[in-house]
Image (cartoon, rainbow, N blue to C red; front, side):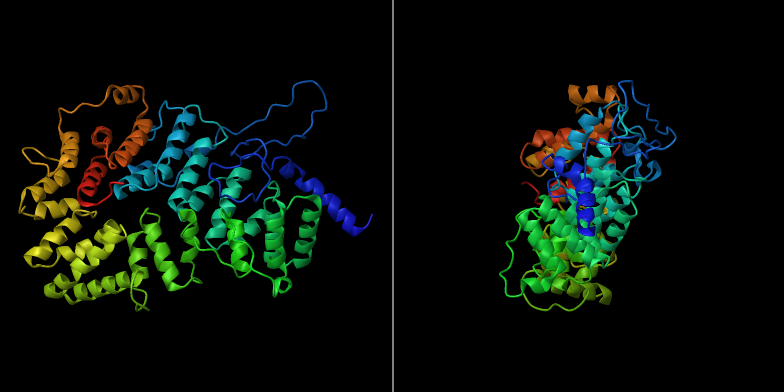
Length: 515
């Protein structure tokens, strides 16, 4: 048998399972690469036995043994109880299916305080649900929600906790690594994980990255001959392997829903895709050092809005160099740098001239909270003119230092008195500014009772479920149903998340986040 025929037979055998399952839905999110062959759901725990795929008799098969010493996948997390303050048994008696459904349904666009709480829940190290299995269903839902938030560094760290990752974990890990510019690490891991069967496109990509262009080209032709690579992907891979073949040829049609692998291939062949219309996770690719400053600035703004990157990284981008032009993001760059210079000088008048301008810029792009967290401490050290001090107070009320700002401020009007009351958790004898304020105030009254449904959940040891439902209530309530605002805040107060409640209430009052 010739070497070419041997290669064809080997590759055909190797990818057959992947081809048979190509039409099955493989992910909770529809943009993941089909980078590895996946079959029936498999355990996320390390396998301790190896069995042949076909039974040799009608007798019962061997019993698979799993170690009971290692953690269940759903128990894996990055933040211990000592950091989160959440009870270790938070998930209690809620079923894995219900928790997975609730996590998948949570919206990314919500208040910063609620985003922060959701991120904490996704990263927390907690006891698994009582019906959890080695499939890691809740674990995968948590990872997918991190991807929705654009929190790729956190997702990668969580995925790294799984030893000997099965296909559904590895394909997420592989895609995250591609978007973070760690494709060589991803390909090395693929080679070092023999139980993971890469699909043709992933294998070809990694062979080329390792410098084995001949094997990559052979795999491409084999995949085409066997019908395992569609026409569009074959054309992308052909140009990726031999750019000279496309000289004088028209550009490829841009894919409407690219996977991370397609995204990187299009970049490699000289047709990079704009990330602004892609899922937020793709914006992380624009933070790489090979991207232009404007591209990195705009990606940083998108990611800072969901808490995927912190305020230090965002302000670092704004102050990296001098603005190259005018309009759009360049105006924010100029304003941030002017404020930074004014604060460094310690001149209250200079700060007074700049602060309203830069604040207006931050409001336009909904980055008030990262801005407040970064500049709030410096603003608190200055004795500012009355009008500027009033603005600085509102800015600080959106920061981590909200309670100190409330204690230091003598209210000038009923609105400020109400903000201070919320920040200190006491709204006795205060007047809310509007109907939203009334809804918030109700959550701080001791006589306001939880709904019977929530009472039942807490009585049944389903605190985590109640919290996830409260997050959804606050997010949706901010769009108009004020009863849900009250209900959601009340639940979070009941379970001891007082700081989150106060911050969310202040954000509802001070930010324009009403749909």
